[in-house]
Length: 365
Image 1 (cartoon, rainbow, N blue to C red):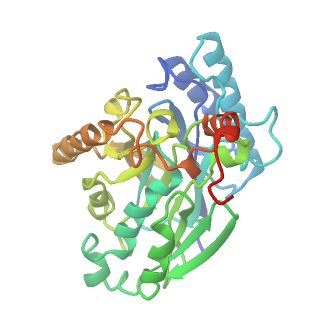
Image 2 (tube, rainbow, N blue to C red):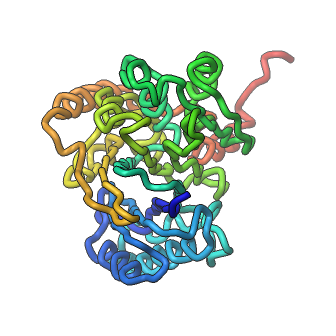
């Protein structure tokens, strides 16, 4: 057994630069300053998509390590102080506690971590989304790891032919279930087709049992008990040699599927794949964006990134996303552009319902 590397991606919105559209350079610089030279880390990269800061870190401490989580928390706290000084919008929005309590889970920031032994060549993609929720990964991950029309490796690569195991989380009842594909596909689709509740958390190679992909599944409104925005999830996917090729992992995003989020976290809109420089959602605070950063890992070092959606091959997808955005926006406050009522519980809906309760007449009496 060789040395295991842990890749941790931890994100938080600690202050938007001009509303929710971006992150001020001083916040990113503070994050780099905080992580630079830290003995816990092998390497790191600080990125952002929209108003979210993403800390991409490699280390040997394993998943759910308290020191790594403390480092991320402290970094976000110090970035929050910079955000407050610059009067950034929603400073500290994703920090739901006054102090770190040993594990970052449940405190607000989104987290995706995987531990594995590096292969001879270890390409990984870190997907980062803004103005959407964890269920946004369900369709792309299904297509990457279970759909042969997307991933031809499932058919012709002997290392992939037996399929993958999908760990699915029920974010309402806090339960999990594992589906084995291809035989459980129809059962799994019953659940992951409802991405507001059921989210793909992890995917494992069925033969080697090694981790293949992991996503963040935190639901901020459920943790906070009030509406504080969507969760802007992250996802890590290992590629090549028994896993989807890089091109197979990117291919699902050629379809700008509808996701929940967008303006005030209360609308459906198309997920638009963009480059880092275009990860500044402004139209109606959107539409939702996804960035893909590709790295080669070398003894834990992050070689890269390559900005994978910075490619004219995705130009047509972006045009299609804008066309869908036009169509959805014309519906204004009507469903299905606006989220259904059960998803609106953390907006003004409860107050309006309470105010008007005496004006409702029971027709059964």
